[in-house]
Image (cartoon, rainbow, N blue to C red):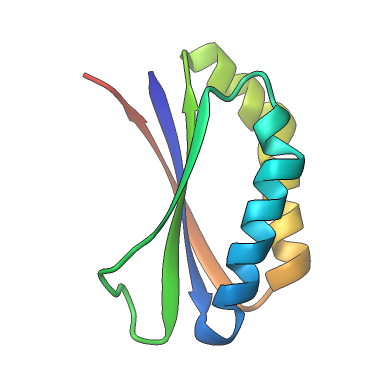
Length: 100
């Protein structure tokens, strides 16, 4: 099992809108993706920076091939949609984890 984690830090002024958008984005497009086993979202309670709120979006995949297919076909669209709505008001980083 692989976990593809996107961590977003949003400005305080945009964090509530981000949560609404993220729920809609997941329900309308990503949740219907057959490559993704499960999606979880979290708000970090530990502050990374005092000037925003941090969210984790976690996509679970059965194997590396499904992850790569998602990366090649859907990742850029997901990030472009985030950028279209929140450009200049967020930063993100991506990590890939594997269960032991």
